[in-house]
Length: 217
Image (cartoon, rainbow, N blue to C red; front, side, top):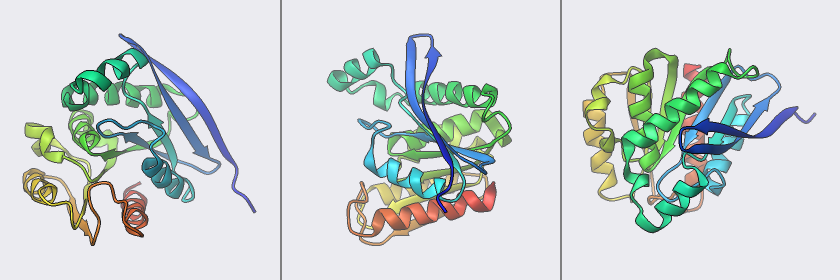
């Protein structure tokens, strides 16, 4: 029997205009995972859409959100500056989180973050601000080190997933792990490079993320 799933395109007002997203709510959902995309990515990222589908199959709602307005996206495609402005991205993510807390369909849901690349740093910085309201954070191929001094303030259980062949980024994740003062874990996926394009590696990352969220919601 096919599970009932509600999917809707949403727009959230921000001072600079509006940002767009895709909210998917399985019938029995009681928690939502907000995705913070990496540098140069969007809610249409096939990798994040795959992870979202894995979570939806476990009755977790997902929100894949573009954190830039259309004009900001155009600007960033030429300057590449906003995608590395972690405080800016974290502020947008908190704005999205507040929308989820007000939305009739999701206001009673527990909330978690899934971040990729620079989006992982934004997720951790936002989690540090939101405190125990964020039940878990997962970083895939992330740059958690870019969250800086926010790392020691994170209370949310945090899982860092890194590719075994993502040289340089593994070390940055190990450094970030040492600074986290919350429940934490580092998982290294064998053979995977930064984008988890190797056969079976994205599936393994999604499985690890799923188990982390299910054990903390």
